[in-house]
Image (cartoon, rainbow, N blue to C red; front, side, top):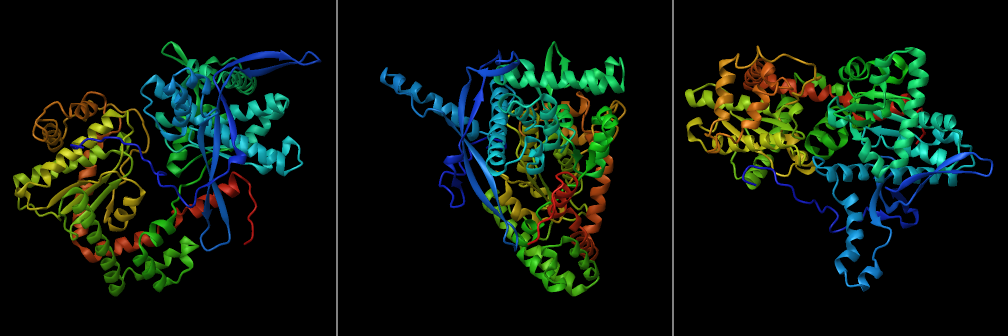
Length: 610
C-alpha cells in the first residue's frame, strides 16, 4: 500500500479443504506455565512434578501427500490449538459475555497467527508458546504410536522414530522428550539422554542470528519451568563431564560450549548449542555452508564431535517446478530424452547434447517467450505496468532480508537509471527487474528496502526519458502460486547473498566508487518520495552501521557481472545454449536426492521396495 508492506491475515482455510481431515480421537493436551515441585516415592527417591499449569488442546488435521507415480501416500499432520474449555458458563452467567470467550480466543491464536512480531515481549512469549505447542503435540503423538504399535523397550524408540530439527525453532523438543522419558515414563537419566541423542538430528540452514535462537531464562522459566530445569541439568552434566574431560580446567571452553549464555546482565538459552548436543548428527545444506558451520559457528563442538557433522546439500521438488508449472518445457524434454527424468533427475544431463541443435534451441526459446508473455499480462493486471516479453526478465524472488541483498540489486538499478538519464542512447538490453518478497513484520529495515524498491519503480516505470529500457516490478503478495508463474518466465535468477558473516573493516570501502556514491546519495535524497529522510535507515545501514552484508564491498564486482549478463543476453544463440546447459545440469539439486541422503546417512532407514 503506497509502496509499503502492509500485513493482513491469510484466511487460507476459510472455505475449507477436501484434503484436510480432522482426527479428534488423537487430540493431545499441552501444558504451559505453572510451577515445578519435588516429590518422593515410597522408597524415598525424588522426582519432579509440573503442576498448576494452563492447558491447550491440540487437534490434529491430516493432509495426504501422494508420491509421484507410486502407490505411496504419506500424511502431513497439522495441529490446531483449542482451549480446553470452549465456554466458561460461570463467567457467562455473571454477565461477562466477552470474558467468557476470551480463553477460547487466546488459545486459538497459538495456531492462527504464525511467526508473530517478536520485537515485543508479548510477541516473544507467543512465539515460544507456539514452538512448544507444535513440538509437544507432535512428540506426544509419536510416543502414542510407539507405545500402542510396538511391544518394545524404550531403548528401541530411536529405531522407530527419527526427529529432524529444522533450524532451532523446534529445539525445545529435546527437553520435552527428556521430560516425557524421565518424568512420565520414569526412565533413568542416562538412558533417557542416550535415547534422546539417537532420536534427534539437526539441520542448520543459515548462520544468521535469528536461526540461532536464544531465549531469556526468565521467559523460559515462566512458560516452561520444568524444561528449563532439564536444560540446566543437561548443561551441568555436559560441562562437568565431556568438556572437563577434554579440556580440564578450561573455563573459557566451558563458557563457549555452555547451553546458557550470559550477556547484558541476563542469561539466555542457546537453542543451537542444545540442538547440536541433543542429537547424533548436525548438517549444513551446502558444502561451503557446512564448512563454515564447522570452522566458524561450532568449531569447539566440531572438535569434540567431528563424526556428528556432515553436509547434505539442499534440493527442490523439481517435478513441481518443471513438470507442473512448465508443462510445455516438460513435454519438450520428454520428447527429446524420454520420461525417465521425472523419476531420476540426473537424466536431465542428456539435454546437454541438444544445446547445439538450432531446432531444439528455437523451441526452447519459444516456450520461454510464451511464459514471459503470460507473466507480462499478470504484471499489467496486478501492477498496471506494461513490460515487453522481449526484455531480459531479471528475477530476485525470496524473503526480504539484508543478507539476501535486495538492496545491492536496488542500488545497481539506481545506477543504471542514472546512466540512462545521462545518455538515453546507452546501448543496453532492455531489462525488467522483478522482485517478489515479504519482510518479517518487525523487520523495519527490510520494510524500508521494500519501500525504496517501490519508490524507484514508481519513477522508472513512468519516465519517458529512458525509452522503456528499464522497468522495475515488485509483485504484490508474493507466494508459491505467483512463483509458479514467475520462475518459468525468468531469464536471470539472482542469488547474491553472502556466504558468511566474517568481520570486515568498511572504512576503506565507503564512497570509494564514484558511481556507487552518486547512486546511493540520489536514492537517499528527496527525489523518489519527496522526503529526504525516507530511506535514511537504508543509507545509514551501509555507511554508518558497518555494512554488515558487504553491499558496498561487492558493488563493483556485482555491476561488472551485470554488464556481462547484458552482453551475454544480446547474443541470443549463446544465451539459449547457456539456458539449456543450465536445465541439463541442475538435476543434482533434486529433493529426491537430498531426502535419500538423509534416509541413508542420518535416519539409517532401509529402502522399501515398491
